[in-house]
Image (cartoon, rainbow, N blue to C red; front, side, top):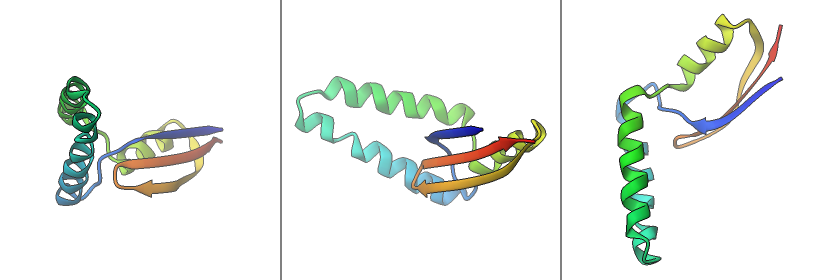
Length: 88
Protein backbone atom coordinates (compact mmCIF):
# COMPACT_ATOMS: atom_id res chain seq x y z
CA UNK A 1 0.00 0.00 0.00
CA UNK A 2 1.31 3.44 -0.94
CA UNK A 3 -0.14 6.63 0.52
CA UNK A 4 1.48 9.99 -0.02
CA UNK A 5 0.32 13.38 1.16
CA UNK A 6 2.35 16.15 -0.38
CA UNK A 7 2.22 19.36 -2.34
CA UNK A 8 1.97 18.82 -6.08
CA UNK A 9 1.86 21.27 -8.95
CA UNK A 10 -1.27 21.37 -11.08
CA UNK A 11 -0.93 20.33 -14.71
CA UNK A 12 -2.51 23.67 -15.63
CA UNK A 13 0.34 26.18 -15.24
CA UNK A 14 -1.98 29.13 -14.59
CA UNK A 15 -3.82 27.25 -11.87
CA UNK A 16 -0.53 26.15 -10.35
CA UNK A 17 0.74 29.75 -10.36
CA UNK A 18 -2.44 30.87 -8.52
CA UNK A 19 -2.15 28.02 -6.00
CA UNK A 20 1.52 28.79 -5.38
CA UNK A 21 0.75 32.48 -4.92
CA UNK A 22 -2.00 31.66 -2.41
CA UNK A 23 0.31 29.31 -0.51
CA UNK A 24 3.04 31.93 -0.27
CA UNK A 25 0.50 34.59 0.76
CA UNK A 26 -0.57 32.28 3.60
CA UNK A 27 2.94 32.65 5.03
CA UNK A 28 1.99 36.24 5.96
CA UNK A 29 0.69 34.71 9.18
CA UNK A 30 4.31 34.45 10.34
CA UNK A 31 4.62 38.25 10.24
CA UNK A 32 1.65 38.52 12.60
CA UNK A 33 3.34 36.02 14.91
CA UNK A 34 6.59 37.97 14.93
CA UNK A 35 8.31 35.17 13.03
CA UNK A 36 9.19 36.90 9.76
CA UNK A 37 12.27 34.70 9.40
CA UNK A 38 9.96 31.67 9.03
CA UNK A 39 8.03 33.44 6.29
CA UNK A 40 11.30 34.14 4.48
CA UNK A 41 12.54 30.54 4.87
CA UNK A 42 9.28 28.94 3.70
CA UNK A 43 8.96 31.33 0.77
CA UNK A 44 12.52 30.55 -0.31
CA UNK A 45 11.82 26.82 0.07
CA UNK A 46 8.80 27.01 -2.21
CA UNK A 47 10.70 29.01 -4.82
CA UNK A 48 13.51 26.43 -4.74
CA UNK A 49 10.98 23.60 -5.13
CA UNK A 50 9.65 25.28 -8.27
CA UNK A 51 12.89 24.25 -9.99
CA UNK A 52 11.97 20.56 -9.72
CA UNK A 53 8.24 20.44 -9.12
CA UNK A 54 6.14 17.36 -9.77
CA UNK A 55 2.53 17.36 -10.91
CA UNK A 56 -0.06 14.89 -9.67
CA UNK A 57 -0.21 13.32 -13.14
CA UNK A 58 3.59 12.91 -13.19
CA UNK A 59 3.42 11.18 -9.79
CA UNK A 60 0.70 8.88 -11.08
CA UNK A 61 2.84 8.00 -14.12
CA UNK A 62 5.77 7.20 -11.84
CA UNK A 63 3.56 4.91 -9.77
CA UNK A 64 2.32 3.18 -12.92
CA UNK A 65 5.91 2.65 -14.07
CA UNK A 66 6.65 1.10 -10.68
CA UNK A 67 3.73 -1.30 -11.27
CA UNK A 68 1.29 0.16 -8.77
CA UNK A 69 -2.41 -0.12 -9.45
CA UNK A 70 -5.66 1.21 -8.01
CA UNK A 71 -4.06 4.67 -8.09
CA UNK A 72 -6.39 7.30 -6.71
CA UNK A 73 -6.16 10.97 -5.85
CA UNK A 74 -8.22 10.75 -2.69
CA UNK A 75 -7.89 14.42 -1.75
CA UNK A 76 -6.90 17.53 -3.67
CA UNK A 77 -7.20 21.14 -2.61
CA UNK A 78 -4.86 23.78 -3.93
CA UNK A 79 -1.43 22.22 -3.83
CA UNK A 80 -2.34 19.68 -1.14
CA UNK A 81 -2.83 16.21 -2.61
CA UNK A 82 -3.17 12.73 -1.15
CA UNK A 83 -2.55 9.81 -3.52
CA UNK A 84 -3.07 6.15 -2.70
CA UNK A 85 -2.08 3.06 -4.66
CA UNK A 86 -1.43 -0.64 -4.19
CA UNK A 87 1.40 -2.75 -5.53
CA UNK A 88 0.28 -5.14 -8.29
